[in-house]
Image (tube, rainbow, N blue to C red; front, side):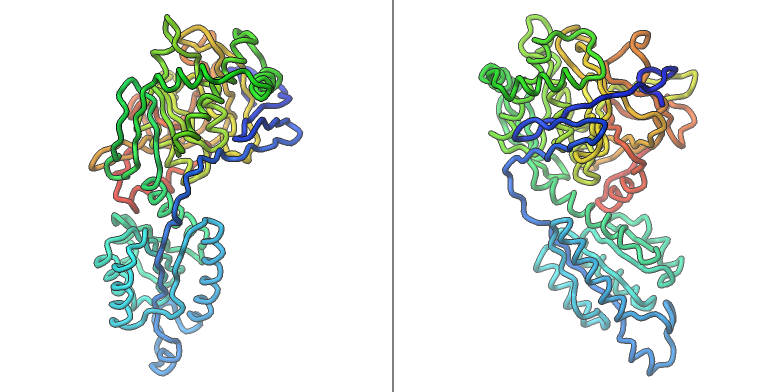
Length: 479
């Protein structure tokens, strides 16, 4: 398995490090202890979903002597009770408030009352579960009149193609036509919860600008801009405590290798983490981005914050480089949807093998989320500035990945690709930033056609789920 170059075998690794909000957590190859997610103190309301089952009482079908799809052997009332219980468990696990009616909607009057309840309550989304083909017009009416993001579960054998095909890609809808697929329902609820969390979130931008606040179009996330000097001041106030020394020693001890950084560089990197954490907690931020590159140039105004970015992302906190709004929003969406961090990188290509190449001087190491085993890293200097301490994270060869980039605006878009990691080219001879990735891109004939810059790469093939999220929330998915 390749880890440091396309032609080198993977060497053993003793351990890596994560940092929690309260201290340092060491992890080894024997058993990786996971850091807790960094708590910001911002309490958010639960996402609220209103739901309904739609079918006639089975006794009325017995009297009529004809059932149509799903047929006479389908126990609608039994499925109702079973699904109701499972959705209740799912809601508790997702920390959501899901109101599912105890009584099925059958008549036009039932549906009318439900629509009025929804309009009065103004939930974040709907969950509709029809158990009768003939009740599909009720589903269409609810969607049309409420105009809310709607998840529909139709057990296999309830609907026909004329019902499924038009709704499958309808904006504002996530249609599941599958055999008792409650897992897909959970995905749909997460999609609704993600949009609600984005509306309730605060993104702090440390930039070369005056303090101000605004709302990000469409997602309605609160964006608070603070002068970059706030980080300089916070860093200067961050003294070298025993906790800082422990983190620096852990970075050093558990690195696979150390090339350029000195012990002082590594200590400064640990201080940068605690400076960032202090600002996050003071502002009660849910995400952050930073105009980081100018401060690395002479005269140096701050150390590279890249190790701090690694540890924060490992803790489940989205933090973006170079105050790139699109990238940071994508990091937030991926974290909320999949509980995974992402690798923001500069886009390039390996034209002879038709592979994508991306690189940046920071990356999370816990690519499968805060509770996962970390990937190895090497400590290097910042590639472009030539000083400080940054991570060179070594990704898994053959690992499936997704690449995404949300593009803000009144009519938002999202670039979505999937592929597999080929290797992390050794540097030198490769140039670019310290953490790099060479990967295939699915369904693209010429890699030079790949769109975007600073796209987010994260573990797992989640392209289908991301595109479904886009459809549900009216975002144009692009490739």
